[in-house]
Image (cartoon, rainbow, N blue to C red; front, side, top):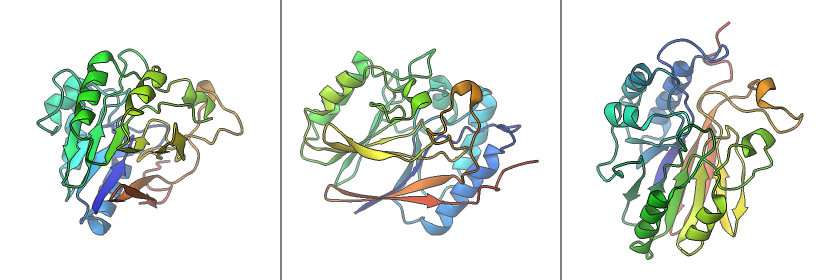
Length: 262
């Protein structure tokens, strides 16, 4: 059995708040909770949107928080991240792609592919030809293992109207590619700040709420100019994987009030 902690979208800022939320307090609470209750996990994955706008300050700051974890935390890139900043300030696996923050983590029982879906200059995502070629080659040589894919941008509309505007743009090509591999068992995506689950072309998927602020439910309808985080507590995921079977437990690690400043 492999046990993984899945976090996403901390939106860390070394200073200040996000609409009255202190993201440093939320991230510290998540790591403290994980250390207290899930230190037996094999590793953690943080699926993108790590920081805010201060590239050097925010990455330096989040690195000091991640260093307090009792298990390795593998960071991924989201639409708000900076690849050079991540390479300079964060610990990345040695097998990361030269031009992208894309890599594979292998265990004896399974393989975990952490994709880079960033499209420069856009909040939407993409998988370019180089990243697609890497993905195909990586899956080709691991056909005998269950494969689990982590990515920031969902490759399908989730009936979350505002978020669906900024999903993976070339989703059809991506799904065509992974559809050739029967060992792809599950997709895990961040970006939308809400938990959803389902199947796409027969492959199960899940999204997750953010370590920082949550996105509103799709009804009442909202748009980006009317966006207001709801009073919902953050959570992370605890994943148990055994012989291709998956259990995902969404775990509240603090109250909504934690990190809210008047």
